[in-house]
Length: 279
Image (tube, rainbow, N blue to C red):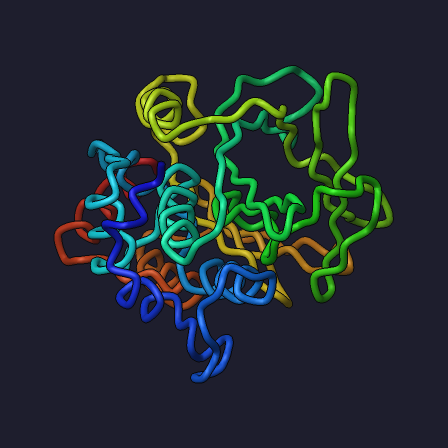
């Protein structure tokens, strides 16, 4: 399903620092400990970003292209790329992986289209939500789906999944003493080809939140970081939100320091040119 047999697993594990995260002697098994270790390592190492959309370049989702960009090129990617890569790795390890399509609920009460890709991984008969592609508010670790309404602590951050009619599941993040919806998804299974269709909208439609806008994000244990447009936001577990503008001359330094993202000379020059033109 996810072309896991074609993945260079050793290169992927080196890219995400799996051995540093889990220990050099940890065996790769399709068990819960491995799922946690791979998920945490992936979200720590590979930045959420949609720079190719801003640069006007196609976003390819075939495994070779995703691996070349995120693993060997050490770039980041957005949900379709991130979770396609994670799905291939988990499938290669031996996990049962299926896709879902989600509706973003962080943009107000108006219904939104299905534009977010998530994964459901089954371990010992129990389903787990895995998502390496929701940016700075997304989970660092798998979230259990077998029992809804239970608070799940991930360090200083708390998540829960609640159920709505028709089997709709909603991932929520606790902020400032209240639960806030992040996204909702149905039981319908999505396949890689479905993400190709969603990616077509997200990477090219004028109403897409990624078209014409810089979006770079990273979840962290202590601080969640987001650079959207020209504003850098630091989100803290206690609810504090610090915002500041990012000037053209510091853009590349912020991408490196805050997001661990270093671009080629060509990409950097093009990005700075677009960024400066927005003044």
